[in-house]
Image (cartoon, rainbow, N blue to C red; front, side, top):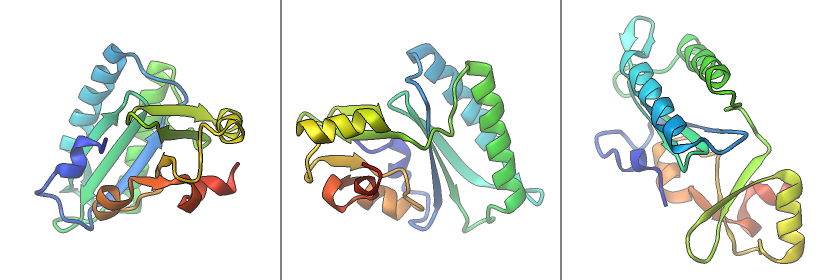
Length: 164
């Protein structure tokens, strides 16, 4: 249930990661188009005129994960701004908001992810659908190592418990 890019063995464990959650589920066609746009962006992404070693993934048609291996060239404020502007433009193109911070996801006992708004997560928690042991998608991971080790965190140990 990890994003495929987490297995990018040619990226350092310290490679920076950004996770963006969409306000809605993209259709399969939209997800493919967004992935193509992301692939084009990451292949040309630069910092101070140096190419960044970067990759991206549309995950579960609901998240965008970007990764930059800074062992070759570090991501700068300008390069971060480029990615934000790119995602804002992409969102406008698809009628989606990739900066939805109050969208949460958990894995059920069958490993299926469920995305929900804050009120929906609160309801799931109150009904017992989400318990202290329910694996929550940790969108605050900072690097590839955390992506591999802390992508799913039990609700009782996650930052999510502070918002419900």
